[in-house]
Length: 192
Image 1 (cartoon, one colour):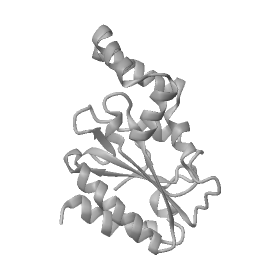
Image 2 (cartoon, one colour):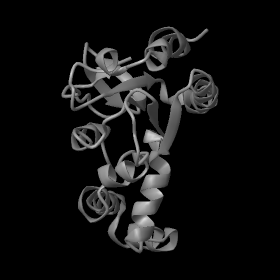
Image 3 (cartoon, rainbow, N blue to C red):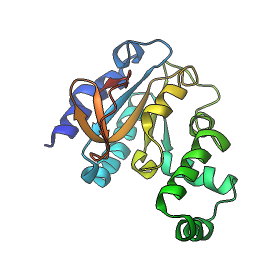
């Protein structure tokens, strides 16, 4: 069994199944979420396992909401009028770096990613019943770093939530997004 699968089933799953996961998932009352890291190359295996984890949590009487950051990105771009064709043309005209900056601006201010994620939360969210799984973070690479998202979700997410993060651990609390970017060491949520 892979390291990430052991951490998922042995460490994280029992916490999510508990009556109130919040105290074990985070030390911060206004940030009841954690990060589950895994190697980027295991993305598809992690997605398969998330489907099974969702089923096991629902069997334990939890209501599970799954939020795709790839879908949030797509929604943000569509709401901003940025079609695939427009993005491709702009990239040819202005270059990859300028296009990445534009997409970052969309996710930061025009269609804030934290607001799109918050839209996916159950309107009647109950911290003792609900669990939120946020996945497909790799779709944000290299436009947007998840450390920004987690800080902006502070106070908006009131139920136990887990961001599934494709990257590498760097020290005790640093993460390298997709294993490529310089490590961010300002993650406050617990890292599994």
